[in-house]
Image 1 (tube, one colour):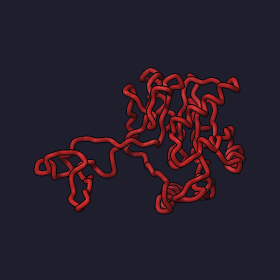
Image 2 (spheres, rainbow, N blue to C red; image 1 turned 180 degrees about the vertical axis):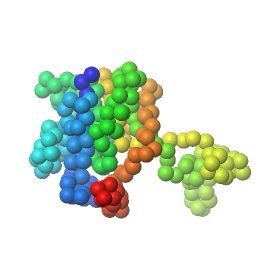
Image 3 (cartoon, one colour; image 1 turned 120 degrees about the vertical axis):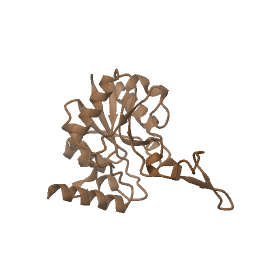
Image 4 (cartoon, one colour; image 1 turned 135 degrees about the vertical axis):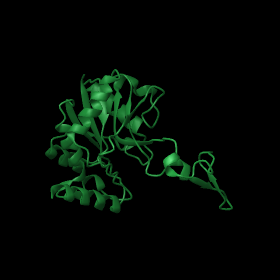
Amino acid sequence: MNIVAMIPARSGSKGLPDKNIKNLCGRPLFDYTIQAALGCSKIKEVFLNSDSQKYLDLGMESGAHPFLRSKDFAMDDTSMRSMVINFVDILEKQGKTFDAIIILCPVYPLRNSDDLTRMIIAFENVGGERSLIGMKEPDTHPYLCYKLNSNNMPTPVIDHAPDSYYRRQTYPKYFELTHWACVVPVKSLSSLNAQLMNKNTYGYMIPSNIHIVDIDTSLDFHFAEFLLQTERR
């Protein structure tokens, strides 16, 4: 199966400016994802998808193929689905075709090549025709999530019996969607929603021994830095 990696790295981060190229332990943040993808034998080619030529130049130094994204697909409200469809359309016009894309957001620097290989094998094992998306146990269980009305009165997001479910050990299992990685068959793109899911999507449980750090803030960045430095000791 011909699978390519697509790493979306737009330049317009608001919370942590230029986070995708921010120096993390001596390397641009997105270099961790590029190297993980390059080291995975299941991935044929690795593309960095960005609206910034500066980012693409740095990505080429790391070994990724450049894909210059139109500003129309680099807005704050641009969905991942529309951006992926644009990526496929442009490459097909250039004569490049493939069966599936593994989408690797660079804000998860602690993935490695073996992690990606296992996920792609899971994709192949379910037939290679269903989108596969990462799932994990939630940091906060939905039973602990509440809405506040205009009078600050809390009501649970999920209706449940608090007297029966007041101990964490008795909570039913729920899982959190994460774009740590997802694999999407090209032919199913038109049927997917903005989260790259449809009724046939397969949930891939990320092994519990994997550190999932999603860098969105300075605190996240420093935590990833700490974990990487700890691994080197």
